[in-house]
Structures are given as structure tokens and as C-alpha cells.
Image 1 (cartoon, rainbow, N blue to C red):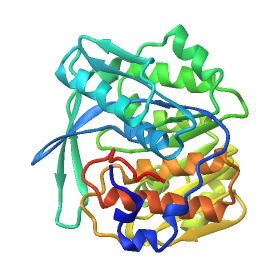
Image 2 (tube, helix red, strand yellow; image 1 turned 90 degrees about the horizontal axis):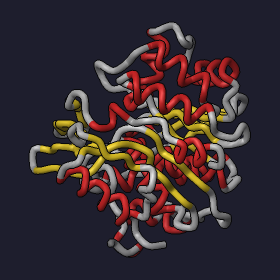
Image 3 (cartoon, one colour; image 1 turned 30 degrees about the vertical axis):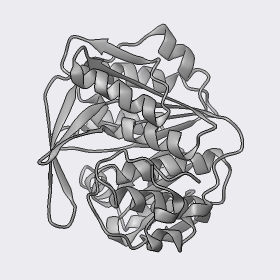
Length: 312
């Protein structure tokens, strides 16, 4: 694992080494897909909820972080479970079924941007609703979910039931994570109704506008979505242009730290993880946004979506 002195100077100089993990212990649950990113140079562990869980466990090590998903009874499934445990993620809620462990074939362009092609009908498409899952969600402080994990009816029903069972005062974070062709508008609407924190990227914000879910300039769209869905806050990541965060009234902006991009896989998941930890810790929005953009930049500088973070 890299030490803090090995961080890129551009990130260390902006204070990321002073990231404060929360002083209390919280229960954080991630729901959805778990898979292997198949890059041209070989496979790397991934999946947005898995990346989120790994980063939460790395940055907030006093917390209990659980991933509820499914893998196949195969080598990839065993390897995925091992990767999660190495990051400190509790895998008690990880189910095993007879479908193959998920895969996504990733192509990275010269700027580090990625495109994806997902294997069909994978283990994470059949996540079952369990008594264990219901009990854990009823006690959680934060739950994070997305729409890709809901591309099939069974997992969609399970994820929505679990999120609906979370405490009313918990963080219910929707990281939209749209991936063609899995962009069902009904699933998006249902997920928006369940969440109280929303994170999208700039392309996803444009998608919501095209579907008539919002309108106007970016800051107007943020305020509209916060008002319509009763959000505590909403964040928009904009790649090299940084990010926005709003409580529905004030809109805060933060530039992206300069970094040498290896690939962008998992950067948004790291942003969401740092956002979640900051909200749980009660930090001010400018600090939350700054920490989240630095976490995303660090992941961009590393291969794959779940790199180990330096020891603080």
C-alpha cells in the first residue's frame, strides 16, 4: 500500500492527506452489481457499489461497510470476495448463485475515458431479498444504490425494497450510474423517489433533462431536483471541470485537482464514498466537496476502480 509521501504532489499540496475520517462508527451498506472490469491488459475488480464500498472502508476505517450483492460459484466470485475482504468490506451479505460472476468489457481512450459492454444475466442480476438484508438495512446509517444494478426485475425489486426499509433519518444515496442500454426511465423515477441524496455526472444530468425530468441551466436543475424529490443534497461531477454540490439553496463549486490520469474507472464511486463520509461526519459542504474531488482524482491516477488508498 502506498504511503502518504508517495501521493502525487498535486494532491498532497491541496491537503488530501488531512482528510478527516469520521470520529464515530457508522453502518454503511452498498447495494447492486459486483463484477470484473475486463481491460485489454487484464481483469480488475470493480462494479460501482463494490468500488464505493471499498473506498468507504479505506477512508473511514472505523465504520462497518457492507456490500449486498451476488457472485457466481466460480473462480471470479471467490476472487471478488477476497478483494472485498482485503479492503475491509464485510461480505456477510454477499450471495452466491449458479449464474456467472459479472463481467464488463472496458475500453479506455487516449484521455483515460472508458466505455463499457456488460455481460448479460450475471449473478448480480438475481440478488434475493433476505431476512439478513432487511435487518441490516433497518439499522444502517447510509445506503448507496444505483440504476445499473436494477437492470433485471429481481434485483431491482430487492434493491428498492431494501432501500425503502432504511431508517427515515439515514442517508439514502442514489449514484445514478447510467450505462447504455440500461437507462429505464421508470427505474430512474422510482429510484429518485427513494433517495434523499443524489449524485450524477454532467452527462447524466443532461440525460435527465432530455427525459423531461428536469430543465434549465445546471444550477437550476439541481435546485429543481432537490425541491421535487425532497433531497438533502445533490452533487454533479464534471470530470476535468470539477464538481458541484448543493443543499437546494446554495450551490458550491470545486475545481478538479490536477492529476495524471491513468483511467477514470471508479472515480465517481470514490467521489460518492467521500461525499457519504463527509455527510455522516457533519462536515461543511465546501470541505465535503473538496475531499470528494480529491478522492476522485486519486482514483483517476491509479489503474482500476478500487485502488488501495494511502494510510493517513
